[in-house]
Length: 568
Image (tube, rainbow, N blue to C red):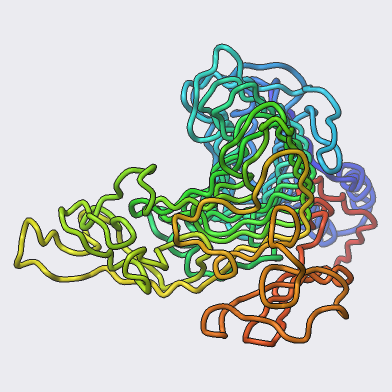
């Protein structure tokens, strides 16, 4: 049974009873007709009000039935209420597209406290995934509508299989997605916790994700696939790579006030954009910002700030973020490890898929972008790829979607059957038509500042493959693990009062690209030198806590009171 509750304080039946008893005493039928119209209007208003659809239990069948009932007459503000209980779902993914603003609400789960410093609560509504290799729920959203998922424990156990799409998967085009006060437990190696895809933005807050497995991904940020309504059916992330970084804005999926324990922090690909802030990350390996391989584009942009990272039980040879693509801001974090070699090697490591043999050979035209640099390509010839900037004939720099590159021209189509790239000259000497082209991606350096590092041999930035260079592609703080000496405006990132900022500064290559940085502690603003000797305000952190956590998103719509009907 589904309990459907209307949120209305208006005593409809009392009004009807009073109206009829009075009007039956009136002479003639005119007033009766008008009161009939009035009553119909009241019923119409009542039918369009927000409603709560309470599932009979937490079972998959019951929850599916509650959602189906809500979808018969969807209204913004509707709530799908899942009651307390422990239920195993084993009938395949529950797929739903909400075209209205909806809350999916459990009775409670273990969640993180402010800053993710500890956890609180218990798993009151616990859903265990036995859906084979599939998500428990996959929810699609539309632009202009909100989605909230709250108070649920989504769990795996010995009867679960590894699934690749996230135990909970949310996509579509909503810019008001909130997932909060939920618990994800990953039991099976290779599984994923929460996946965000399509073009969604919003906030994930007060989440607790834990796992005893090493190779799991707690988050998957694929939310650049169809960025800002990109209709590309292949979901390649191309449009996200034409948009600016958007640092300090709502144009990201934020994770805040959460605790993540174990596994890998997560994955980001196909133009994804995310922020990890004000959270606690315990004994968790780094986030993989994947690079561009075939037609699927790499991760676009990320921020990490005001987090507590502690890795004391193992060693991650990479970094807090494995930045194989796009750009990153990483500041104000506390990073802790043991002096016996456990911990992170870097804050950011900058490997690059199309230049590193560790990733294997990237197929050349017509099957891929090829390798970056003057190297032996998969067509059997040694030459450079037309998809890269090739300012340096040896390394290919700048390479397509490499670390520290940003917005560029729009790419469209896909590899076979379109055959992007160049023809295989080795197999067909007459075929010499070049269709690949460097998309003129701007330099968008990586900036690191104000991080506190203790306890382990460490470098702020590692890797680079010869195409990511200090004080060109990244700028870092001064101190033991960063730039030596002190800040004078010619290199690195300085910090202090705005009034103490040097009057001169060094811009990036050409004197008119982004260069050295300065963090003004009194205005919480990062200034970047561009052009030479000109400081430009570049970044201010987005509002914290996220505005979606402060709104009435997904809560019951207040019942109307004091209504007056005027009959003419």
